[in-house]
Length: 120
Image (cartoon, helix red, strand yellow):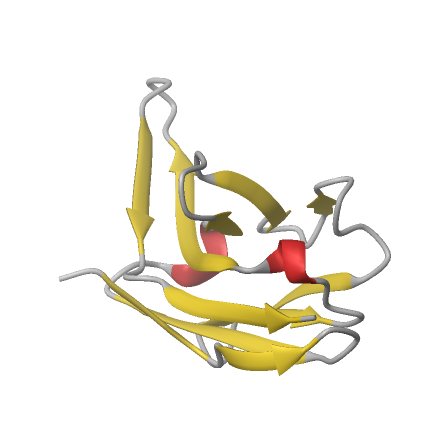
């Protein structure tokens, strides 16, 4: 059974920092690309950051330079370090594990989400 369990969300003042963690079980963690997505009330889910199995990273323009994604394959954990937080970063943050198969089909798994609230 595949499980992705996020933690580390909470309430923080603007300018503050949070570190999100996502522990993954039930898959071969090291071969999956991992990502953090977020969804604010009334908005669509959007990509925040991704890290490939080879540790190539990509960021949304809105968080580049403030957020850092990393992975620890020994701990089956992906992190999102969030600095200089802004009220517009308020959202539920979701962890994702994704693997593209040779057939072209993707295996994709999601966590339950963790709330991040940034007060002004």
